[in-house]
Image 1: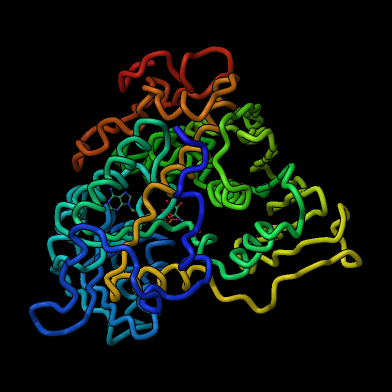
Image 2: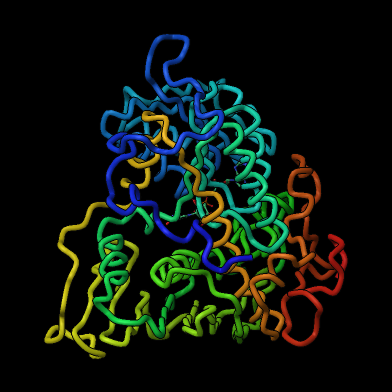
Length: 466
Ligand SMILES: NC(=O)c1ccc[n+]([C@@H]2O[C@H](COP(=O)([O-])OP(=O)(O)OC[C@H]3O[C@@H](n4cnc5c(N)ncnc54)[C@H](O)[C@@H]3O)[C@@H](O)[C@H]2O)c1
């Protein structure tokens, strides 16, 4: 398999940052003729929001903010009724005219996403912002219904879920279903300018990258056993960052943007990951994560990317990705996802005295830009499918986590073909039923232990066995 798939490079249209509709002659794929003008005679694009948490609500606002987009939220789905009501109230307050969600279009439970998508017409949009484990079955249903899809990152958590996504990417193209993936940094105008400047050789040959996501815990760490009366799977979904099946853990969920940004600038996906990491908070009873990860990614040309993730209290905080070229250093994003404040320096010192180019400020919001690009493609009938790139970015991130959890290096091909299927059975979850991962008699969960297991926390790939 090529290490430089087409998916790593932005198309010319994407790079230029133009809206899809401004580009004449975009490739026409089979089946791109999903209806744009609906039976009612309007150009309205209906949206069903599935997963009404922080990001579901935020992405709904981004979707409703597309200028001239004629977007309207018509259905909500979640596994918790209160979450759906919170998002309904919040978006109604901001977009009274563009929210039409009566109580009978609010759906709760594991089948809720199907009921919400059943409220859409072919050519409308499904917005998936649940924990990542559900992406594949939900995208499969959207494709079946001919509904375009925006899905949050990460979209896969291991080799098998990545393979499923790659297959779904092909199916989406066949059906003319357009898919956007919430790796919004790819839609950042300033990072796109940096990408072109790097291609033009302004930093010379790209030799090394480094990145950091180091901060206090922001997810739920339970130090006392017991989940009360709550069903185990719902309880796990409330703290999905803690469970590898639900999210790929904090490394996959938090770090995928940075790893994707570096691979984009470098021009290929890493071919190998070597890693280490550890658990320092021994009292955690329901968290499969390490508290720190240190990954050495290697690219096919020998370039390196050193990435450090630490989620611990009271330590230094760092957040950003940086590169070193033969002519000079550069910042891809310096302190947060937006603004990126991308910069190229005249030499290896990254200080104010050595700036060759600095991204113009203020920067357009990439969360808004990704929706503008997506809706423009729908309106113009242009090809648009970020699934392959999103799956590869998600898998390469998970590959780093896997190397740390097992204590063994792993290659891209080995991991893509790995049999350890963390989300096996996710499409069979039912309300009130058991979870994919069941706590032991003492209420604790298996944790990775480098050098001990064949896979991350178990020797068998059969769900429920360790
Ligand atoms: N692009 C970004 O910068 C960005 C930022 C934040 C979150 N995210 C992503 O968005 C996703 C959600 O994150 P969040 O912070 O909003 O989490 P959250 O816990 O606030 O929201 C998740 C919601 O999904 C619901 N849910 C869980 N399982 C469901 C199911 N099977 N069907 C329907 N609803 C279900 C939960 O009840 C919850 O309301 C994650 O994948 C995360 O990585 C992306």
